[in-house]
Length: 329
Image (cartoon, rainbow, N blue to C red; front, side, top):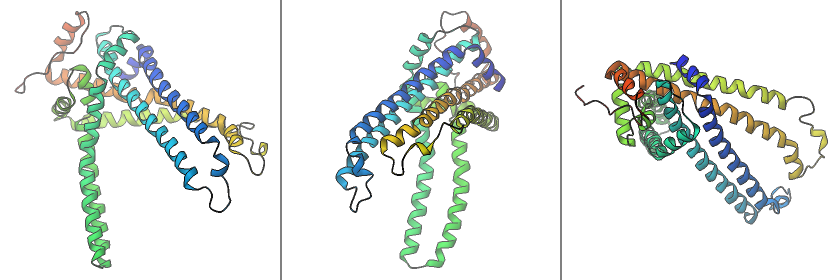
């Protein structure tokens, strides 16, 4: 699986990296523009916000700052959510052609990925909701028992309650991981089989049944490897930021202004953005690619996908790799 993922990246790096670079670069640009706009909106009040005088800053100065950066956070979340969803849809699109050994253009990847992006968002949202429900119920019950015990004045009963909470967390954690692995193939199913979110979750559970440990091991290794490579990519940029001359605190006075601080740390901030963007190009592509290969492998093992692939290789454009088999197969 890992070898196939690296081979696919090597042969189809233009649409894969190009799509991720375009989307995450665009999302980063939106964040930078929003940050500049938010900073400009509160620039006139910067002295009041950083003043050490008693009673400063007051609510009239803090509220605009909170609103500006609250809007910035919302815009950033929306931008990165869309970018991540399109990339998750684009990777299986490229993989469809890679399995058949055919080239694919950037425009075609964009068109087919965008057509499935809302189903991808729905699938990811439902998966997260399913994972959060047992955790939220457990935390709500634990908090209720804690409040009830304290209200009775039984301080000695708090310690056993904490032990019960820790034991419950040990059970909830593995259960959440089990659910995550069970539904991990759903985004790939959305693209390969044109399924809607709920049907994709069911289909993923069907494919993972009987091979949970294999899917878990390969998926965990893929995410660990992607995180390690992403960290290795960021290390040179962090070392550049520590080179002599890159950071000179002597250049500012004892009481630096906001503009001087921004100018001083601007280079480090830019390096941080660039390093995170480059690392994200790999971490956003590699795990979904491994998951897609797992999906193809499982279908070939259990559903005889080989003839379907051979038939798709002779068609003009494989929009999907055939419908799932009947339930009794």
